[in-house]
Length: 130
Image (tube, rainbow, N blue to C red):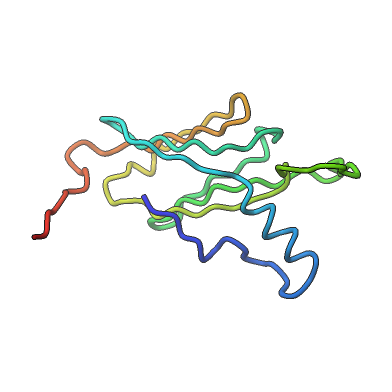
């Protein structure tokens, strides 16, 4: 599974304040991925979000994980702001051995956990090059 950064600021208007805010908020969801014997587990760190506003979409060999805040989402006059609760989009390339039909997710304690099951016998082969 690989991160595709080319989509990170998709839709941003170049040279505007809006672009900077959109780009910054789209980069705010840190992701860690680890592999178990039967799946990849992706942890998307996204505190303060609403579970129903997360979106996971698979198209071809890409998984898009995104979040859109609801209309009217409060925007306080921040004195100090170190993380965003705004929207984001992350795109990952899926290996052929991922069972895309059975990807599942849950949001708990500010972390979206996405489980990407591996099709038995379809794991990526490691090739050593000398």
